[in-house]
Image (cartoon, rainbow, N blue to C red; front, side, top):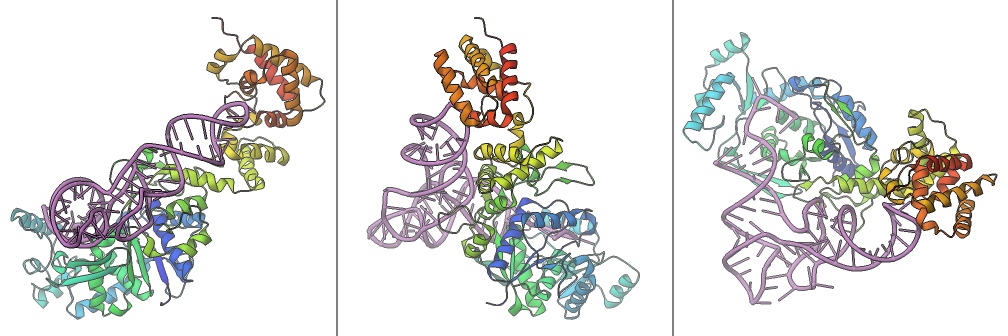
Length: 511
RNA sequence: GGUCCGUUCGUCUAGGGGUUAGGACACCAGAUUUUCAUUCUGGUAACACGGGUUCGAUUCCCGUACGGACUACCA
């Protein structure tokens, strides 16, 4: 196998879609697996859609996800520049070559004229409504105009594009690594614009020229490119690069979880999950979108989840580190059908990965949250809090979100539960419990438990009946980590105070 | 409309001419637990449809339906 060189080639038109992250990941995995090169190329040939900050966003997203770039924008390399807007002269040269060889032509048709042509064909119910072999001789271009006219138009500054002469009725074969052989009749392909009137190439020309020059071995991209892939094959042929043509792999799309259609930001918003890797504010509309990172997804969990959306190793293993992924990955095992994006699975992965962290690592998350809240906390306490909450956490921020009571005396209580379960026995039991603790110099989980048992005996009230009320008094809520450990962590004073507060303020329901 | 691509539990998928069609997520139930969670056990649940080919088709072929992508001087 020749050297594997793959590229991820986004255009900087906004935040990077999560599907783009998956495309980048598959490219990256293939590169790593074969000790090849992962290239990042920015396809910014559309000046109208350029969005400031988008390129930086893409770079930061990939870096966060752990998708490393070996060569390309921000990294440099032997085929620089890697930004298409900086390669204008190169595309012009190749377009000129096609022109010289009679494989392309100048076209001067205005937008209105093109529109009129399409309308005319539409009204004739023609199946092919395009600028191609059937129509090109009726249009305003260097095939129908005399050389003088063409020269005159160009020198007078009239806008023009360069179009490819697509031959009619030729079987164009494409061997897709995922879909197998795909045949398209060239009559279905129109005379695609290669160079736009602003002097920039279109995607089609630029990607073929760049992939060739950059010695790309595999083009791994979304399925939306499948219909234009035959055109790209044609271009390789016209340039005489057939033998250097990369292999194609068109990835199935990511679809919305409910209903049909491809995953869009709207759907994600509606379902309440992010669709972009990082937070993003559109500079034009000021619209804000949350990111996976800020929502607490770990990059390794996201990648594992993404990898399995359309690919699987054929074994029953579900958890794969990046390293394992690169070893197991093959293009052959990518599925053909679109995959619905179910955030539940992503959450599960996140939980799994969070759990593999050491208590030390988890502590960092908690400390980070606390810092934002300006709450001081010893390392020792943070360690205990995290250890006690580890099993019930999905996101790093849950340590704080679900464990506030470790640091702040609760002021909100589960009233419904109190009105149901707060009774004379509870008051009697907890009063006695406070008295017992007060006599101790300190409290830990073990002592708390034995004290509880002792009170249960002296009051003849089973502790099972009061535990939930003790929890509400201590934490405000009905669910949470081990209560004995909770008392140990908040300490004797706080434990007593909270129980005393409950004793004073919780009301027995009079029925 | 045209072209291309696709279709196994609700979701991600394994499988492949003869299987009790497997796993994971989610869901439900039970056990454990001071609660929630964890853990464990169990459960519901799928080959889109119709024709062929074949002794036999979910698997191969052809249609149909449905879905998707593309159909720009956007990528």
